[in-house]
Image 1: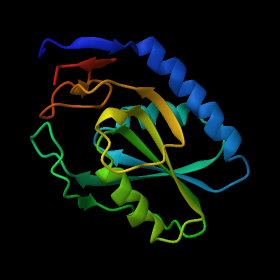
Image 2 (image 1 turned 180 degrees about the horizontal axis):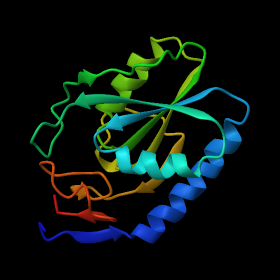
Image 3 (image 1 turned 180 degrees about the vertical axis):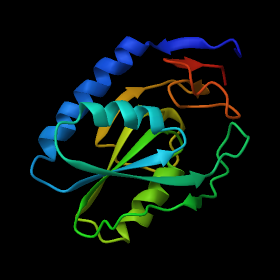
Image 4 (image 1 turned 90 degrees about the vertical axis):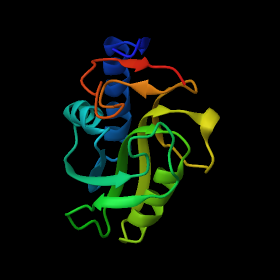
Length: 172
């Protein structure tokens, strides 16, 4: 499958997801928290994360496009599906699979902030700081990854490899 090299095992992912969930549960205890999953890549991460969070939360999804069938972001962000639930005066936590250039997350932080929540923070399973073009504050970070194309655990290449249980690299 694309000569994919193992970067992060399923066991390491599950341990880190549980750690992130404990931190989120503590930080948002007694607050109205809405998890906003960024489709499609975050759905597996969000599913495992929410099962480990031990406070009441609401969940919604947003879908954006910036890559298409390319390995490189176009930098042009389009909302394909907006959130459905009202978020005024609630705390939002954007749950993302990977922050790469930062364009998408920067756009989403501004877009969701305009909906008048109490706060908007970012939880990213993966961070690729070597490619960052826009500074993005990541409150909860799973792992840093090298400047390679990453697949598995929800991340895809042309809609393939999402179902891999671990994080793999298919090169540059």
